[in-house]
Length: 319
Ligand code: RIB
Ligand code: CA
Image 1 (cartoon, rainbow, N blue to C red):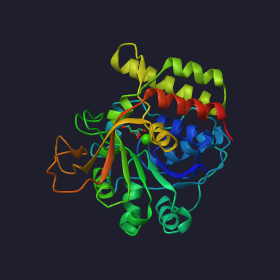
Image 2: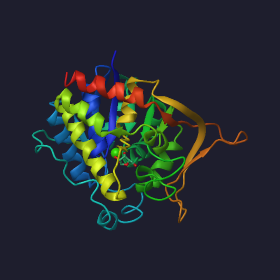
Image 3: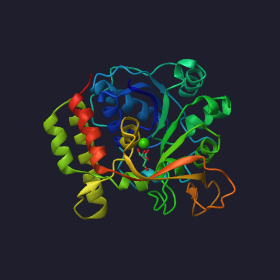
């Protein structure tokens, strides 16, 4: 039976690759997508998500969600300032204009209606963007904490952040949402931080392979990975041999529970006040930690398993 899941995302390039893999892999069923402000503004996230689904001919309902963080009027550093420093995530992904449209029901309303329904009792929730939608849904309907069977989150960093030394982008964009979701007492939480995603980066050779496979999902993924390699090269001023592709790793884990080679069960929380550490994921592994573990935190992934997952998905193509 395929693993059924809902994807809450901020489509961006790696979210797009996660969608390509999710809609193609024979062991996965993408039930719905909810979109959230993150890599780009919400209207672009939703449009990019529709473009990507249309590119592979996947008919999956898309529900638009929060246009700004849970409590703050903008990012901790306003988007206009942040975007001035980077062209990494473009407003519109380079795929044909969408022909499909988002649902009229909002993401938060959809998440509440879905997870209050027994039909979603086995549907994992995967989050690859800021956790604003999920925090709003939990604040609106706290019973969701006991009804969402499993939450797999791309976010946080145990070693080095990517927005600041301490904070990873998804948790940094909306620290209050991340803290609210991780502290909500969900039944099962798996966090896929930068430590795991950086341990299994993808390369130009992988792109060569996906281009040879030639399916729309494979070719689309190759184009986006090459863009990430080129950006890393331009940013560092030296040849980028590989690049971490974060979000598909959450989806890969659903189909390949053997993906992570190192993980820790711990009490996790997110810094919401520190001037230097705002958005930091705190992983308390002290033996005497007063709080019980509330998440499994992946620390390393198998590049071989990750590539097997992507190869299987891209060879399968759109079912
Ligand atoms: O820090 C990486 C994460 O932030 C990825 O999910 C990327 O898509 C952005 O959302
Ligand atoms: Ca993302």
